[in-house]
Length: 215
Image (cartoon, rainbow, N blue to C red; front, side, top):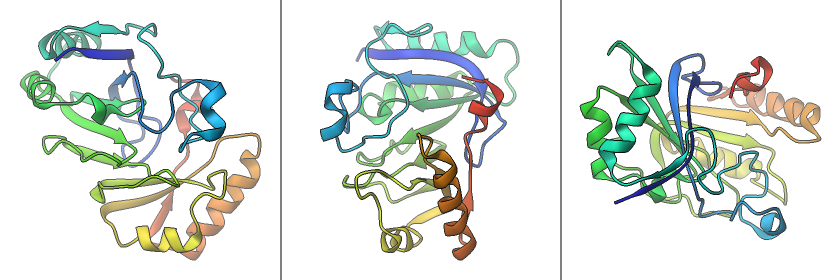
């Protein structure tokens, strides 16, 4: 299988439980909840994505003919040293492309593999850290993992408070609320804080990479 990659880079994880951790980010092209075209945003299931995942023209992006070539490219970003190798598979929706061959190739090179997914496709069983970010109006089938990261509030009606309470019962180690970053960011932050104050099972996470100027 070949792989379409939008971009790849070395950075620090900016959000969630693993925030601050050195990581190679591998962003796959394509998503099943939005085409990535602005003219389609208003009718898409996910309307608030802030990421360009269209095409393969990003930083060190491209089409990789096989898993070994892609894993070797990722390893090149990490550099020397085996300890702590960590890679985040993201998108778009990475589970459209992640397969046995890629998981094996990354593990063979010493990587701990994390994934950031919308949860509408089952996560590969070989993934070491599963982060699911549900989008209102989608059918989330991956209801277990390490962290559930819910953007709040979501436009177009979004999730209700009852939905949040139902998600608290999903089998995740950590339940996180992340304020939506849009033109109403201050109001969204206050709403997210209020939600967490009322529901101690949940924790607040912010997109620290945006404050720090990281990719």
